[in-house]
Image 1 (tube, rainbow, N blue to C red):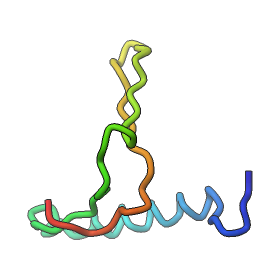
Image 2: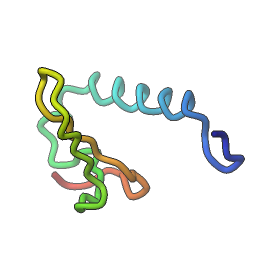
Image 3: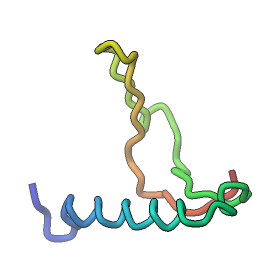
Image 4: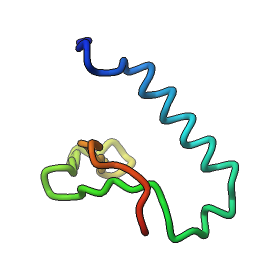
Length: 72
């Protein structure tokens, strides 16, 4: 479903890949105290799929509206 005020899924994926590739290029950032952070981890923002498919349970984080750079 497309909403006029939300970016398309394609655009979100492009931005994710851009951020990931940028961070991957800078190995010195891996040792940084500043990281890209969810900033709102609570029970309501964690989904655990209890169905196992041979790989164990799946853990997913949702609701990234407060995501930004922050201290580890």
